[in-house]
Length: 336
Image 1: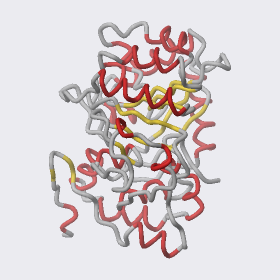
Image 2: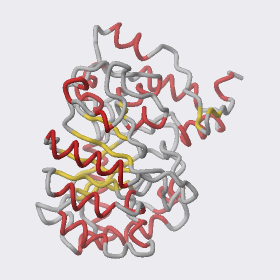
Image 3: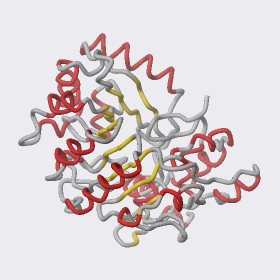
């Protein structure tokens, strides 16, 4: 048995996965230098509190987590958005709607930012005080991005918990009822993560399947489907190790490395902020506490775009998840 199959925890998180070759070596072999092109998207992870505890969750979010962003950090994010005119704010969690200042954050950001994306898990809509989320989203014209592992109940509940599928379909219908998926200003995108140690299928193909089946079975419509590779970190890495799939999965990711994905990786134009205000190249690095390069500002309170532009991106074995096949990002595949 390879030692990598043994579950290891450091500071409450899974240790980094093993891989056949380092990501840096792979980049070097293809004469690639991974650097930022500037901050076009400020992705803010407002905390780890969530009403679900999904098996694939790279955040390790759950109803028992207490980490939530303070008003002070939110104000610092808003100051950056106002001062530097960053075009897109991407709010994620956990379930971001559960933090006390979520609606304040969105309302203030709307005055400045051209586009606001909310990573919405659908079932949070049924939590106390959240039943009007569709109307709130419509009023602010936010783009809603929601995970739905499959258009059938068995696969979805296997990944996200019993009863999640039925609630998700009901939530999608509520979003449709206020115009999401039909009004050109109200964008509803879904996210597909494979159930198991597999790479996602071709995005365009499975999007066609999702649109056909959700419309036919439940009269639900949406705009786009994003396929995202499960990242070998946190809860998903724990599952890979307990099921003895880590070695084969990392080999699969490494073998599927596609150099043409590197130019479109989300870390090149995105800056990730955690609930305390620390800065990272992406949300995945954030979960592993791999902060931006030492010469860059380390917190949102010290944000300076000139010092963050052209910074060298920090990498680790999990980065193979973003460069496998057609690539993977918060906006789906990155290469045709």
